[in-house]
Length: 190
Image: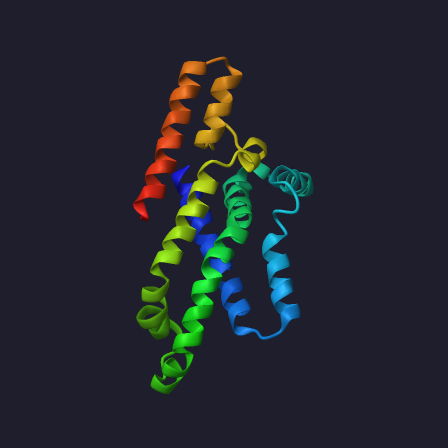
C-alpha cells in the first residue's frame, strides 16, 4: 500500500504540476478548457471501468499479473490528478505572475528556478496535493480488485478479502489501521 501510494503520488504530482504550469502560462481559454478536461477525464468514467478496459486490452497480449503494480499505480495517479491539479494551479499561477520577470532578469531557469523560487512558494500546496493523492491511492479498491493477486495486495484488498472470508474482526482492525493512517497523514500537513 505504501509503495503504491508513494509512486502514484509522485506520478500524480508530476502530471498535475505539468498541467497546472501549462494552464498558468497559457492565455488561451480553449487551451485552459482542454487542460481542465484532460485532468477531469478520469473522473468522467469510474476507475473500475477504466481498470476493466485495461485488463481486457492487455490480457490477450501479455501477463497482466506482471504489469499489475504499474497499472494500479497509474490508475491511482490518474484518479488523483484532477484534485492535484486543482490544488497546485492557483499557487503556480500566482508564483509565475510574481516571479517570472525577476527569474528572467536573473537568468534563473530549470532546476535553479524550481529550487530557489518555486519550491519555497509551493511548499504548502505541494504538501496538500501529495497527501490528497496518497490518501486517495491508499484507499483505492478499483484497480487492485482486478490486478491484485496473492503476491500483490493493498490494505483495501486485504479488508475486502477478510470480509469475504467472514473475518469481520480482522477486517475491522485493518480498516481501523487504514483510517488511522489516513487521518495521521492529513494532520501531518497542518
